[in-house]
Image (tube, rainbow, N blue to C red):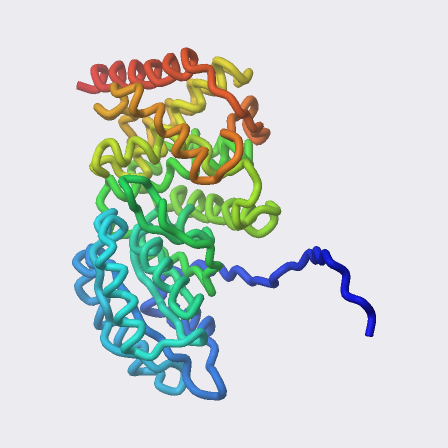
Length: 391
């Protein structure tokens, strides 16, 4: 037998498939899209448990009935395990560790295994928290996400991250776990409030600035119509944002964020901090809009971004319906604490993404405090001026 060396370093790659589907009515005429994703095991129907965001169930009173009907009408394809579970929506679910315990207990008493499916229907926070529970149960069940907000359809629902908040820090507890599939359904976002509808488009602004100059121009052009819920322009923009997020995760070379940079978190160092500072009264999409605005101005002051482009970003975000202001922005020292929390979350050097030119991001490792303060104040001034103008 050959002698085994004292040191063995072997690179290896785990094959994964990220399945993204777009439907018009997944619990109606497009049911087969969901059924086709649920593979049988040993020739038996797929074992499936459904979890629903309470806010979504309240807005769609017949949704639970529709979900039950799918299983009842297709017993040869899926077997529904237990009752349809409902959990609180919004950041409440990510802030309460006892809800996580409850989810795990339900998984356990249901005898779910690694070939069982959790189909979770809800906004980004519910997808995050349920996905975390799924990732740690038996080291990973099969997760099918059905995002119900523009934010989760355009961004977070596409990702491979799952998390809960802990120690007053956003996403401190979490895992990387590739979903079995994601289904972006057009019907499910029709009942969103206007506030929640526009929420996802801050992430579209972000990813277009990072990836696609043409998309950015189109988004600026269509911003007012999107804010007015014109689906002929809103739906293509959700699809484009989802596609770019999927492309970055699957082709960007760093799906589990092992490197220093997190390009898709452009604007997020302040966004995450503003959320916790506001006790989550500021929603994620709103905080991202402010964060993108701040880092866009900083990019123009320090990194060479054309001032006219920076102005266009602020105009675009405002046209979409974002106010770009919050009282927490006045607490500069506390807000700057978000930089260190952002660094700690990844480790290593502080690494922020900035945009000197649309479609051509760069990484920076230091922040000029006076210029960042000026950026924050400029965003506030812009927002105050717009608010006064619209009165």
